[in-house]
Length: 378
Image (cartoon, rainbow, N blue to C red; front, side):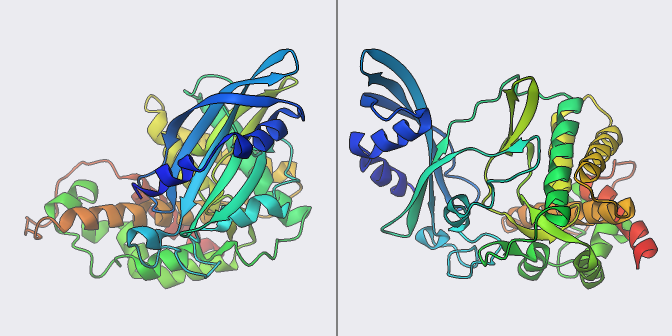
């Protein structure tokens, strides 16, 4: 991973940049002589991501000097850095299929989105030697402060609801084979399960202090029931990676739009799936707000978005999809992080019952609600 990005960047010269910059500005005659590059992210976490780079400079259009900036996203097969079963192969339905965005942006799937939601313009994609690829994208900068208010989060939740309803009421589900399907089933199949996980390890007990009364643990032990119920829900296009860092605010003629970035995990998923990770991130970012207030406010926004686009189904179904997907999405990620930590130390016995009076973590709260709702919808 350390060598891939420099080699890709070294191949970028004025001949490569000029058509990208001209397309981004809508100026056919602009010339570029000099530019600078800064890395914005990537190179950690998901092995598909090599890096995100901003190219910017001043162009010359006849007598006018024009500032410009574009984003280069460099991706790779996880096999390049020794990862297995992480989307490095040719299975386009794998949840982490590494070429998904290279297929998605030119497909037209994101050309007709509901009011309020938009995506960065794409100025070109290319598959490169060595199982790497790049995408040239519009440079999106948040129109306001990056410190969003609860109301701004609720607006994006409403826009996510519109996205999900749009593919339930106005557009047919896309049939592209490169869209992720059954992500939660893939995660459950490939990650530590509830039976084998060391729930009594002191480090684990810091997050799950009473394992015998942990509804998230019970959800993992009986994951087939939860997954079957999710499969029965209405399915729609899902962004797939809705942590708040993947959204920016944009002003357009007095309207406030949400720009959705990073569609690498886009797929066909149950109603409510897109809301869980977003609520989790909002609760983390809004530490001055009670978590339950954040949860309810964003869920109300999401339902309003579904109604905006004509979905008139039972809100209980959306609530179950949200709660169950949230518990599994966030919880399985926490379990895998804890599993990696525990590889450095052997499990230790501690007194039964664990620590007392520790607030329930996000996935426990969501799993408890999902279990209660499951009894109503089965």
